[in-house]
Image 1 (cartoon, rainbow, N blue to C red):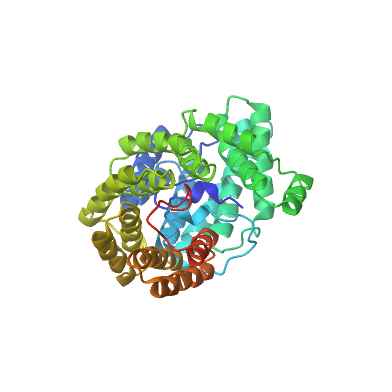
Image 2 (cartoon, helix red, strand yellow):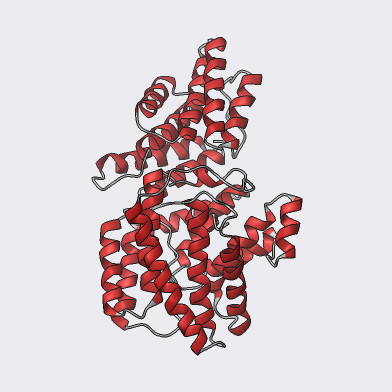
Amino acid sequence: MRLVPIVLAGVLFLALATAVPANPRSVELRKVGFTHAYNLDHEKATAAFRAAIEADPADPGAYRAMAAVAWLNLLYRRGSVSVDDYLGSMTQPNIKLNSPPAELAAQFHTNVDQALKLAEQQLQARPGDAGAHYDVGAAVGQLAGYTATVDGKVFGGFTAARRAFDEHERVLALDPSRKDAGLILGTYRYIVANLNMVMRWMAYVVGFGGGRERAIETLESCAGYPSDVQTEAKIALVLIYNRERRYDAALRILAGLREQYPLNRLLWLETGATQLRAGRVREGLASLETGVAMFERDGRPKAYGEGALWYFKRGSARVAAGQAAPARSDLDRALALEARGWVRGRTQVELGKLLDLAGKRAEAKAAYTRGADLCRLDNDTLGVEDAERWLQKAYAGTNPPAGRQ
């Protein structure tokens, strides 16, 4: 169920504070690793986290960080790197996904299992310690998130998710100053608040508290509290603010993150996409121009389908800006590259708009139909809605409603 905190693969982690003070060297190395991870330097992050384990083999946070690197790489290989992956429905119980590479899956499970083992030992020794409850909740929260995003079983990690929620509620009961516990609590509450009525009622019955505003306030408190998960809480809010169409709030967070992590090209992708959703076409195009330039000169490993995603996004901005020829160039380039199904689908929709503008309605409708089919196969409900909208009414050059890009 833990979808929100892992929206921007390559950026997000669940490497949380430990129940007892770790070796100072381990703590410092984890901080170094987080900075590398948020700057998309995955190999450097892995090396730093491995060194943190060597510096303090009893530090659960170091093992969680190593598990998170494996999780990150799995999501990268699948191309789950953008807010768009999580803007649609939250109610689908299972999604068919390819099995993860055995080596990375083993790296995740070995490290998260060790983190949980150490945390359980600490909790047994200090049952009233807020930090011990925090560590246990963090580890089982990772397991729940992995089950949803890698195994595709959105509710398969229900038991782990429930325990993570309970443990972090206990943290705040024992120590209200631990605002970092709000990451898991705020995330789950927001997800529950967006379920349909029957599923929401079931979640309440088994102990998941909901409430959209309460969830957002909890995450905002976490994002303002210095901790290892402060950045992750901010990124979770970028997704939620986009879902809530609070675009100015999302853009303020993104501006701060770009300054803090200047090597993270994906932050420019999300900035441009957010500006397009807000109807700020010129600003969105400028941001995407900056991001595409970073992408093209960045020699580090890219996510699956990342190139197609960049050119689709810039192409859609150019369509909205009325730049037909460069838009067509970007969209054709996106279709020529490996890509996620929903990216191909939405690219076809943008091509349909260009065909509509050229007076080729029959060809445009064919493109919209292809786009709807591709988006439907990749569970992209918003993409299907867009395609069906333009099938009913020819695109005439006006910007689509905020939130549709």
